[in-house]
Length: 227
Length: 384
Image (cartoon, rainbow over the protein chains, first blue to last red):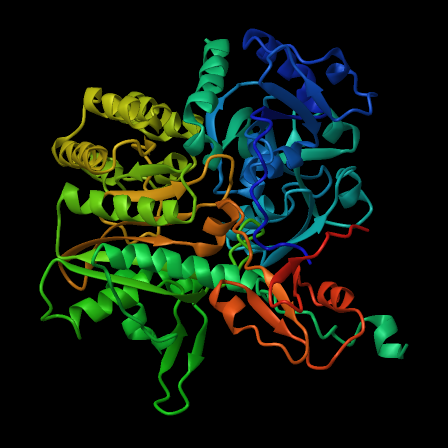
């Protein structure tokens, strides 16, 4: 029988967990962490390392390395007290349990609508009732088009979005655009910017409420790292 | 195996609708005991129990303070009157209705307590539960910092009776920021949202001349003294200043009535059960993600000031130290366990003679067996 009211887990570890995103933003995080005085275990920067949780020079702080979307989930559920993730992820998930007290200004890009050069500007989107869009941001996409009176049928993909229009999977894509070179290479053009994106320091609401001194100190250290 | 089983078409008999569950032994008894302990603490402070029904007509359920719960409420049609009814999603509006109707003539301040089950449409993966137990108090007809402090102190005492002493009470004043924005001539849903998510970048973008003040207050959330100092130093407008003063007075009243409680203050938060019109409180247990309870000031009926706190017994129990279950004693066939029941044992009667009484006792989950001399014998624990 699983206990519905398990005895409380002894708080042997008061370690704070900082969730960091793999991939694009990882490298840009390094200087911010350094200025905040956080030196993770060397294995952290090694993308080939199988470890997921790393100690730091700070006794009370561990870092975990997870997918960008998962940073928000770990923090929303309180598994990690603080994290760094893109504003795109926060727009997509919209967890009320996440506070975003600092704009770190790194990982700048934008979340945009793009379509094949051949069809761009060919007809007026105001006449559309619905449109099929490939994206890994179904909520952002639906919301964006709904505000224009258009139903978006979202085809959820996790990568290679740029293939979708050319292979007839969708008319448009909604994706992150940094330099635009991937779009260009696939003969797509950016037709609308939905929102600019930078990375945010995020904290779990309950962690801030129940451990305000400790969490507050980390917010303050990141804030000073930006100054 | 039938073809239905293989394809999974036939639902498993144990499967319940999402967000609902069976409580089994010993948890069901633990829960009932905990609710009674909370209610006893409330009763000891003069809060008298009321018992509203599970469902009522939606127009009474959603009147006044209840409107905030409308979208989370399960509804059904009354076959008699053809009127829509709602299953309560929160008991506070029901108690407010009782206070303003059937108990309109009762002396004020009126102290009422209640416990019961509520049903909510599940919101998301973080709060998947649809059936929520509540146990709470309402203090109706008093608008003072001392009234705010009383419900906090009584709730803290009720929690302590279950061994939940490591708590923190987060105080907010939901009308403060809306008053500041209104008096500053700023009206922006984008800003309200940004403040709710403590999204500093978006606050700076939308707040105009208030950006500096709001950012400082945003980061001031934390220990009560620090947050109140930031509020005192902030350039507030007239009504916002009155709200801030009331928040400070409430903190002082709580510190006077219940010294030693851990208090935090979040100056910009205006979240809550959405009907709150004054100082509000959320109870946390350090190290636990879920809230133990919520409360705050609201209007009872049209204009009567009221405040209250609702505890969530399920979360409270998860934060509480384990309570020892009552010891179970196997009483062999033909013997009487009355004296042992009086001594606190739960007795399990053998319905027929058995060869190995110790083995039978263990099989039935008993830690003791009643010996031939009429004395309980502790059985050796067997592992594996």
